[in-house]
Image (cartoon, rainbow, N blue to C red; front, side, top):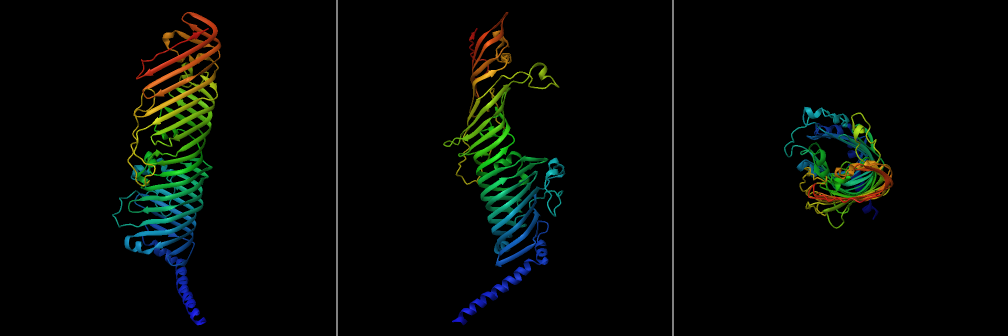
Length: 503
C-alpha cells in the first residue's frame, strides 16, 4: 500500500521540480527580461527585481517597472509588488495580452500625451507633464497602426491596494486606498478604459500645473466606469462626458463655480468661495443623474446675481429630483452675509479700490433657491454606462434676466430682515421719475425677488426710524417705509411699480 501511495507523491514532486526550478530560474535571468524587451522595444519595456511562479501561468513580481508608448500616448507603471495570471492562447492567436487576477500594491501611474505637431509641443502646460522612462518627450504622435499590427492589453479582475501616485498630463497627486475593475489598453487605437470599477480612495494631495497644493484630505467611495477613450483626443469639456460615477464624496473645494453648471448651466447665478463638499454624486455622459445629493459647508461663500454681489459664509445644496431626471435644485443659504453693488463715481475709476461704497445690507439668513427643469436628454440612469449618447455643449442663449433660454428656470431670492448701514446706497433702486433721493440714515430691508427667463417680480420693503431724504424740492428727517413692487413680464417696459412713502 505504501508503494502505491509513494509513487504518485514522487511523481508530483518530480513534476513540481521540473516546473519550479527551470521556470523560476528563467524568470530571474537577465536574458529573460532582455528577450521580452526585444519583442517591441518601441512599444513597451519591462523590468523587475525578483520573480517567481508556484504554478503554470501565474507569476509574482517584486519591483515591477514597465513603460511604453502608443501612437498617441506615453505611459509608465511601477509597483512594489505584483501577481498575475497570463493567457498564452490569445497572445499567440490575436496579439492580445490577457491578464487575469492582477494584484498591484503601491502603484505609480504616469500618462503623457504625445504632441500632435510642433506647435503642440510648445504648449506651456507640457512643462508640467511627467517624464516617461526610456521615452523621448518630444516624439510626435503617429498615425494609428493597422489592425493586428500592435499588441493589446486586457486585465480582468484588477485589484490595486496600498499607497498610490498618479501623474496624468499636468495633474498629479497621491491616492491611498483600493481600486478594482477590468482594465483595457489598446495600443492600436491608443485607447484606455475601465469596466466594472469599484473604488475606495482618499486623495492626500492634488497639483494642477504649477499649483502644488490644490486639494488634500479628500475621499471617494463607490462605482466607476470609464468607457474606452483616447486621452490625446479628449480635451476640455469633452473629458467630462467620459466617466460614469456613483460614489460618496468628501473633499475640500477651492471654488464653487461648477455647482450652477450641474443643474443645467444656469449662469445667471454665479457662486464662488471655498469649503467642503460632501454627499452622493451620480454622474454620466456629462449629466448629473437621479440619486445626486451634494452639500457644501462654505467657510467663504460668494454669490453674484447680475450686478448684485453677496459675500459671507453658509451652505449650498445641489439636489437632483429623486423622482424626475429633468428637475434639479440648487439652494444657497448664508449664515452671515453682506450685499453690495459695483462701486460708482471715483471708486469705479481706474486705479481706485472697488467696494468703497457702504453695503446694501448686512445680516443673517439670506436664501437663494434655483429650480431648473431641462428637456429630457433621454438618459436612463440604469443604462449601460458604456453606451454614451451624443451631448451638445453649445452655450445656451441668455434672456434679459440672465437665465438661459430653453429651460424652465426659476430663481427665488428671499431676504429676511437685514440691517442697512446707510440707506443712501439704495438710491440706485429708485426710478428717476419718482424724484426721490435717500440722503442718509440707517434702516432695515426685507423682501423677495423672483426671476424666470421671461419674467421678474420684486417685493422689497425699506424702513427707517430716522431717514434723511429729499422729495422734489423738499428735505426732511423722518421715519420712512418705502415699499417697492415691480412685475416685469415679457420684457422691460411692462412693469407695475407701487410706492408707499410714510413719514
